Image (cartoon, rainbow, N blue to C red; front, side):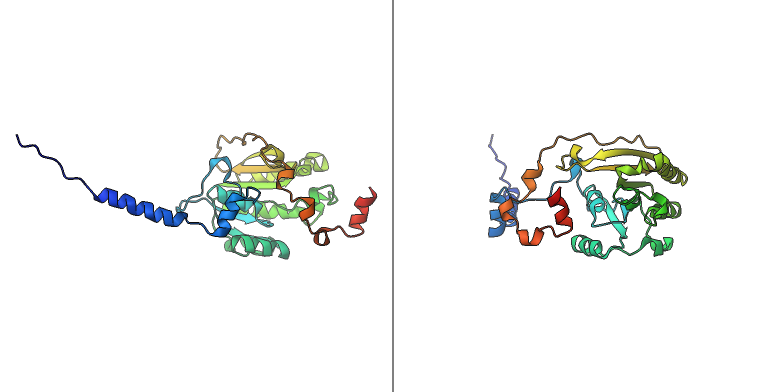
Amino acid sequence: MKKTTKPLKTKPRARTEAVAKSSGRRRKQSPESKRADADESVLREDPAPYGTKTTKTDSKLRFIDLFAGIGGIRLGLERAGGKCVFSSEWDSDATKSYEAYFGDKPAGDITKIQNSDIPDHDILAGGFPCQAFSIIGGMKGFGDTRGTLFFEIERILRAKQPRAFLLENVRNLVSHDKGQTFKVILEHLKLPGYHVHWRILNALHYNLPQKRERVIIVGFKDNHPFEWPQHQPLKKTLAAVLEPDEAVNRKKFSLKAPFGTQFQNN
């Protein structure tokens, strides 16, 4: 019998070589980038928490960012794959920082924004003003104009009926006025038909070198089996992220009297 052999297929190999060359071009780094990779002291943004990855599909959860500040809540929701469709912040300095970071300028005073001007969304997020409930802010609660801004959240929940909400405030909100203020807030969050969960969380328990306690309130239209995230071990210390004293320009960061005097005398 005549022995036959199958011809070698060269196309896959050629394609593999082309891909390898293309990948090599993409991996080429600038001298600045190489120096940054070699220098372990360069701070880099942490990866998305809990193993989440952002997606480029059109099925992203749409959220709005109220009382946005400089965008801390937005950053977390975007890392989890969400898409911000509206933001609101009245402080001009915070607005500038927010726009510089995210590329879009928040709308102004939420009390002057009509429900019809707010896009439909899946999640309402907001760190509503905390000064009215904090010790340093005088603890006037709903007697402070800033305290009544919570009811803007209720207004939007009733009008837009998002699937869920995520709210943040100071720990003292829970005990303000012997718990009566917080009781009113929870009641008004349940009235539009939400199943509400809340807990005081400490950033220190989630791999952040800062003892920052905040009450987190979440709510769902459907009664989901919600669970709070598990504690994570602290892998970084504050000393690991602070600049050394000799690298700080004291002319730019010195405390001025009477504020500085107050700390010098104590």
